[in-house]
Length: 285
Ligand SMILES: Nc1ncnc2c1ncn2[C@@H]1O[C@H](COP(=O)(O)OP(=O)(O)O)[C@@H](O)[C@H]1O
Ligand SMILES: [Mg+2]
Image (spheres, rainbow, N blue to C red):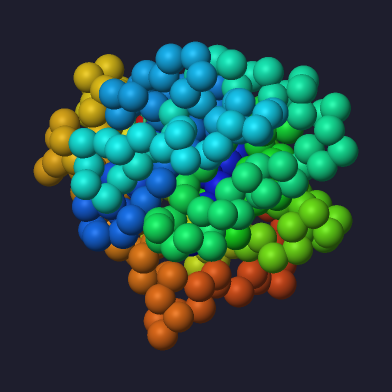
């Protein structure tokens, strides 16, 4: 089982949307997937129609002795299970700090699942803050998938999350965590600004950036309000099709006989700054 943390300390960049739709697309493609909602707001859970009651999140497993098994729920998708989030998870930020092993607690908790090989992938929807929950996810992850909104402020967020990845890898907390990929979200090809941001990120991160951008689509918000994945709500829509393609690329990247699992990081991986972008073009064309 490979653990993928979907993380970016910036909020509103498409982490949860990616968690919901990548996990469902992977499951429909035949992979056995467990989605772990680690954001106390529980949007990935409610987005799939799994609003959790108190006691159903990972909270009591992380802070006590509750078994992990009792928290895993099946979903409408045959190959997809979920551990939903509930507000109680926020307590981990305070309570876990008190224990000596707080950064690796999540990794320890997930270890039996890793051995069992019951799931192929565990996707973690991380909260948007740089707290214990997100750090724990990175400490437990094999790979980090970074959704980034195609806009100017996204570049700063990207620089920060790449730094955090490097710190986790070099500090010894989790030396083997790789950058799984960068996914450009809410792409609108009609604006030159959007296109310029994507170009700059590709220049710095080359093949680490997924070749398909997730387009901006109203179907995303609509599907979430109906508590459905895009595959259920708007299967032929452009956002749904993009996530389907991302799932296929994701799976092909995991195939050891195909291209390297994690594309080599270019020597110059300095994150582009806003100065690298052309001046705003005014009215989008
Ligand atoms: N491709 C998209 N097109 C349009 N709206 C999107 C898209 N992706 C995400 N959104 C919307 O943007 C907001 C933030 O997305 P979300 O996935 O919750 O981000 P995060 O988990 O990083 O905070 C939500 O209201 C969501 O519906
Ligand atoms: Mg979220």
